Length: 85
Image (cartoon, rainbow, N blue to C red; front, side, top):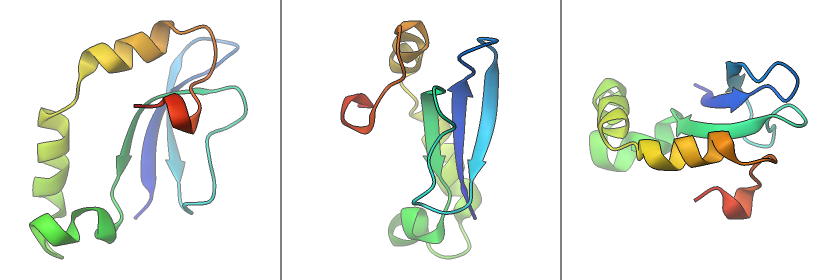
């Protein structure tokens, strides 16, 4: 399973869902990452087991800090890994 990243297109300013199939791949150049969910097995295995991915995603969705996502949306430049928190 890949990672899903909600990003803002730097040209159109529309939001887009980017699927990243390999961890070393990132976000298209210039796109701002607003929200990222890791759905690889290692992300949820410890707490939810191999067959409980849906519960892991539900828990993630219930714990999103929408103020952080909104702040990222309004920032002038793309958010780098160190500033993503």
